[in-house]
Length: 445
View (cartoon, rainbow, N blue to C red):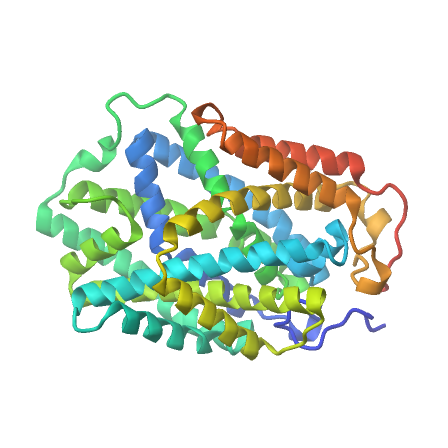
């Protein structure tokens, strides 16, 4: 029997992905693994080593890899089984209109990352070729980035990112070899950070990575394209620990080694590391920077577009195709790349990160609830006309935990390592108490 929720196009986040529009495991793997390459992951690993010591950073990275692998394994399994997007799943949690807050936060976060990653390319290009102004470089980045997502996950993004993946890994290896040959080997990278690092610094590292749990939302919107017969592969490999070993651990270790080996001046940032790579590798360094940032920006633009599409359809009943919304996202990204708003964006991301942690806590609580299928069915009801506009059980838990997290974040250093954890626990506990106990209307799959 055909599902009444069945979709019109597989890329629209307002529709369930049908079985015939699912991607094979190779295509989805290559499309998703575009997310594993970003200068940001390299820089975060270095920042953790400088703040808490190399040993603590490595321990924290290993814990993070395991935590991300487990959580995203759970999320990807559910997304594959249901074909739901973050926006559709949030309808179940927060109501047909309440879900719009989730898609808005997701759109804004993906857009912010697109701005950062695109700016790294533009600044590096301008740095290496001063005759190319930053304004022109930024425009070039946006003009080629937008068309990259016109195709679907399984017809273009997989091929584009699949071709570039070996060059990303090769670039990491070449950078390490060149740095060692140029500056000689030093074990300074193993002793980075304070002289007497905190014995619990690994906890600080683990908590810091909770700030980028938006990758759980990324996972949800990509995993829905997986075939049900491939669910074990996706849970254990594609969206699991192996992915984060490359994205976090390998990138972090390479970054720590390079910064510990190469002379480095000025503040640590994605741009400063990009400059160091260009200095070390020349034009090949610029190409490597382009590969890292362009690969992850395919995901940033794709998810910003589909969630903006979902938001305007649900809130304002505006129906436009993905290409039109991709152009809108491109315009927004370019304009913000030209405005000095990065300090404000970083602050906004900190607050949005708290809302994302609370969303993940509620999502996991819902998915793992022992009576979930009995109450909501294998495929939950997602039609707006069959749902409350605002579901108090999810919204109260989400907003209360998020507000508490924002307050704790601003109370000082004593809460810096706890506000995200408290947000998670409170959100999960409140939703568990408020979650509906009676059987809901079911949709026949």
